[in-house]
Image 1 (cartoon, helix red, strand yellow):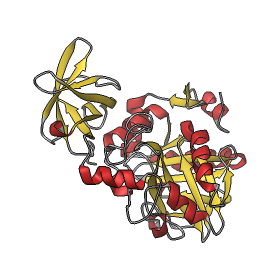
Image 2 (cartoon, helix red, strand yellow):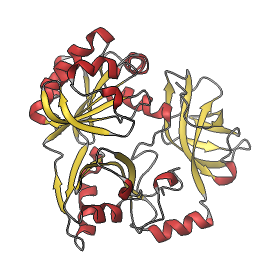
Image 3 (cartoon, one colour):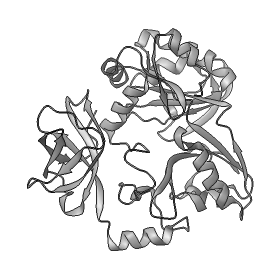
Length: 361
């Protein structure tokens, strides 16, 4: 089990630690509902240093990224980030990721912790005929997510840069919490605004301490992975291993908006054909009509009781006040407003298909 540079700090703070993607990670501190509300109403800080970081450099960097990713990275200018995915050769997804353009010929790919090795091998395979410079920085870098409506105000004292002036999915490389040259990125996985801070492992303790100090008057709290999951699910953001995986296509998962057929990429032809012919199933969002919590793996049924799909993510949503979930269903059943049923143990509970996000803010 790997530790992050802050594992001891989390343990000292009384965090409940669990194994996650091969890492010893804080799942909660004060409790998931309290932490969730802290992020929705004020500001919270997550240690998400388990995420992977690859540096792709040189004159061939863009060519490699264009080949392995579904979105069009040629649109990125320096200081911009882009959500994308890595398609596999069989209509599935290797991983979803964020691509940052750091310099003219330098890109940072941020990938999921559970897929670091798999992603590296996949990208390396396609790099054999291209020859871009690749470096895996995952073990050397830490990542903090400072999220919530008060994040900008709470953190402004820690940087000479105007944090409010960084647009969504843009970033700067600048000073933060007394450390030079950290990435301050206006990205996140909660839907409540804020930043993600990339720094070296040797710098993260100082940044963590100063973030908690600067945010004290704004009600900042450390937040665990359990609240990260409820927050992202209320926004309908996909979680790799649940809502997307090696068997789900970007088009089925509602990721057509990051799948650009204006360029050639891995499996582009097959995915273009799938788009033309239409998918057989799609990822839908549903809210429970009664008090009940849908869980991953539960069966979805139509009103007549026929099986139509499976729950991929589900929870009791603190900000919505009801059970919510995502799941794949066959196309005829995938209409907003339709009633479906969720098999919860021995009973079936009705639910309604809704438009994302669940949480409207």
